[in-house]
Length: 377
Image 1: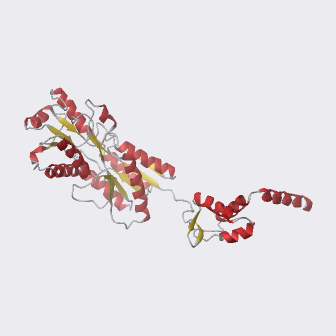
Image 2: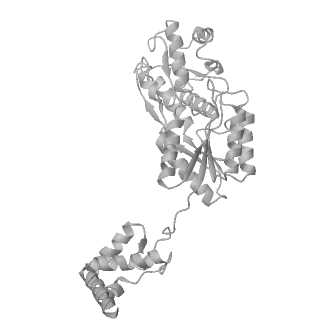
Image 3: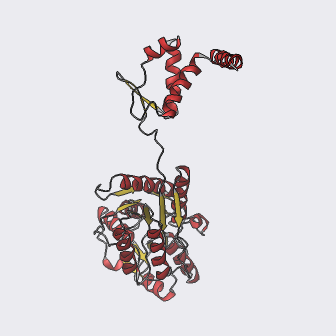
């Protein structure tokens, strides 16, 4: 028994001696970290100590420590030494909920939520999706309430919420969602829009584009084409983001020396032929629409009324949805960097969980003007 044990020990020693010095140093430190002998924040033996212990050269020891650093296990501090990285501990997994009542009708939320889902999966978080039973674009208020209750029962760590718009009951529903989550102590990150009209703020974290800048950019483009009168069209009950876009639209006109009339801003259905006839009869020759869906419906109506775009009426939108470039003519619009919005939203949520006392933040991503044919340039 003793002889067998000695032979095995000899084989182990031979195997150890065949390892490169680099590998010996690397595995020694790694074993100490994984076993807990070296804990988070502990200082590793110095390079000089490891050189003596393993009979290795200093560059060999440095390379082993560098490999551990690349793995995220240690951090090297100039003039101080090498320490077990403070994030070596297992990252906590969270369960999040998505409350996106307009997911089926507002195209920008698909890539935003897709990015949030990718990041959740990558970092071992769980993401719950709610079904709101949308019929003809109208989410069921009862289902929204039930999804909220379900998220609370499942103890989600946070909720990503895109407030409801274009509904007579939207304000009550949005307030109810916020109230339920606050009562349960669940943080909320708003996507794209607030629940209160501009210039008010709800006091919640919000991630979206700079809508005032977006309104300025699209209007300034039309001004550069020689437009003196520019109208703005939105549907009734639009999100507070539309008020911000109108603010930027007005600013661009004033900046060019044009005083915009309140009569140039219209609230109505772009598919209503009589309504659109009235807008054109009033003198509209260039129309900025609150979003691409409104612009697409307007262009369909204009075609039916025999008003050529852009020859008679210039049209522009916001969002740069997939079909915007497929419209005839292709739609000039504002691009929303949806992947960036999703990435930042996840970061903001994790920071809010880590530090609940942070002041509420508006994280505004820069939009981009996409010039196509619907404005004549």
